[in-house]
Image (cartoon, rainbow, N blue to C red; front, side):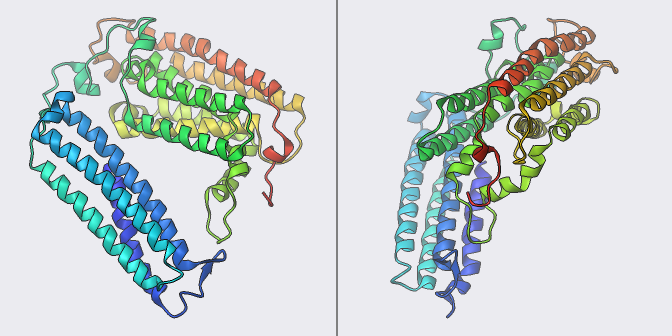
Length: 436
């Protein structure tokens, strides 16, 4: 995330340098984008991009520093003092950059666009150089917490990078946590964006907000707590984790009606470029076919569990995260197509409930078949070599996975049918509009 922010920021400045000649030509003042001078549009978009990049750089830098400081006493070391200086300098430079960009954009009508753009580029380069200078000083100072990785001494550490968790009990489903900062950031951003939309909408049902926030809370629990921790050592826990990401979390998020909130609060672009609303319009047709989305979800579950992809998901952190995000997106599409289809065609309520019941039952049966291990034991080398001294044997654990999926899957599927019976989406929200 740190390098992503740095590269986006530097790349934004580089792109600005490339387009400055177009802003300094004789026809630059006459060019417009949606009725707004082209130079103003370019600089405003760069300012937004630089703001996002600055947040990524600062937030990831804070997390990185916390890991190296170890505890509060680390702040009193030379490294800790440099961390505080860098944090203060970064915030100050970010504020200066934001203020200067706003000032430069406001002067476009009185000063030539080319001169303003070049000045903005020079100031941005100075800000980045200053931050890099402080970072270079940090690189020459040893952190309080040694960064040498100790050699793994247990089979679980060799396979997962972590110690084998304690024996799974009912209370540890709630007490075992391992924060995944990627998902913490994802949940925080999703909550903030939704709440900003609710504030802009002014009138919005509180039940939808509560459902969205509950879905994000469950997502944080699934990705940072027992389902993920024990999902690396128990197949039954992994199947529960994937089922929650593909069914339960998307159900709660869809009941929050984020697409309807976007339709109410985000205006369509008038400059011929696709924005958030336009990209949603592109995928809307696929959200009108529940059977198609159910097939995609079922096929995805089968491909993950009964191909070499499952071993990659277990072994590599990045593949694991991509798989989680994929099933969250596919589950969201399926739940949207069932609860709030976007085709605009009137669908009888009884037919919608009947379709949902058939698809939900078929998906649950398919998940049970996959989890119960009708086919040979999945990844025996991984789960057997974990040297787990507690819990059921690997073969029995895979058989128990079918029962756990049945128990855990029945609740969200029943909730889906209940929500479908009670859910009422206004026609003007569920149908796409060319004028909204």
